[in-house]
Length: 454
Ligand SMILES: [Zn+2]
Image 1 (cartoon, rainbow, N blue to C red):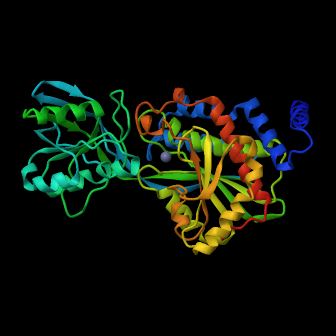
Image 2 (tube, rainbow, N blue to C red; image 1 turned 180 degrees about the vertical axis):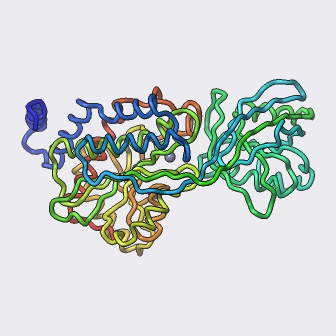
C-alpha cells in the first residue's frame, strides 16, 4: 500500500466516524480511490480517441480486445486471456438518400445492421408513410414497388424498436422495395439511429435504413398534403463471412473459495458510428475499473471476481452464447453474472434476474440481495430488486445462472443511442468514477459473502 493511499484511508475513517460499518468504510475508500485516479475515464478516453467505434469484424474491435487485455494485466489481474468466438461481419458501405419529389434535398440516413444493399446505382421509388404494422396491413399490396416508411414516435425502446427490427420483413411481405424507419429515440439533432434488424426467410430481403425524426415527420406532412414523395436510395451494405473475435476474461482469484465466481461484465463491441462511448464503452471501463480498484487497494475477496468483456452484443450475441456453451460446467459455481449496459449515468439499481426459480425462491433471493445494501450505502439510493439483467449474460441466465443488471439513470440514454453522437463528451467523468466504485463495492461485498441466489 502506498503512503498516499494510506493517508486517504485514514482520512476517510476519520470523516465517517466510529459508527460506520466496515462495508460502508470500504465503499468510501473505493470511492476516494476512484475519484483520485479517474481510471475509468482515462480508459474510456483512450478507447474512444485512439481506437474508436468497434463493430464486430472490424479492426478496431480487434485492437480493443488486445488493449483491454493489456490494461487488465497491467492492473495486476490474473488469468487474463481472450476466448475466441466467430462473429457476424456486416459492413455498411457507402449510403445516401435523396428526396426527388415534392422538393429535392438530401437526407441523413443510417443503414440498419444486417441490411442488404440496394442495386449498384441505387433504387428510385415512391414513399408510403405508415404509422403502424396495422396500417401497413390495411394497405397491403398497395405498397408494392414502394419504399415503406414507418413513422412511429418513440414511446419507450421496447415499444418502438420492433419497427426497426421487423419493419423490412413486414414491408417485403407486400412487395415493398425498401423499408425506412423513423429513428428509435426521443429527440434528434438530425441524428439517425442505427441498430439490428432481421429478415423473415419467407420474404425477399430488402434494403432498410433509419431516417431522422426530422425527415420522418416531414415526409408524413408531405403525404398528409397529398403530395407524391419520391426518393432515391443507395446503400452499399453487405454481409461478409463470419470473422474471428473474442471475449476478454480476467480474474481476481478468491482466497477462500476460488471456484465460486462473481462475473462483472460489459460489451466491448459497438455500432460502427460515433465512438461507442456510452454503448457500451462506459460499461466496459467501469467493469475493468471496479476490478482494478479492488486489486489496487489490496482487497482480497473470498470468492473469485471475474471480468468478462463481451464481443458482438450489438448484432448477434455470439459472445454471450459462446461463453454459455464453453462454461456450462461452471454454472453451479457462478454466484451471479453482473452486466452493465445501460449507459454512464449514476447507478440506481441492481436487479436480480432469476429465470428458473419459483416465486418463493425469488422472494428468498431478494432478501439475500438486500443483505448487500450496507455495502453500497455511500452511493446514495440504489434499489436492490428483482428484474432484468443484460443481453450478453442472458444466454447463461436462461439456463438458470443468476443474472444481475446494473440499472443506470437513463435520462439521456436514448438521445444518442447507436448514433454518430455517442461520443466521449457526453460522458460525465465523475459519474464514471462514482459508478466504478459502486460496482466495486457491490461486487466485493458479494464476493465476500455466503450469499447464493439459486
Ligand atoms: Zn449495449
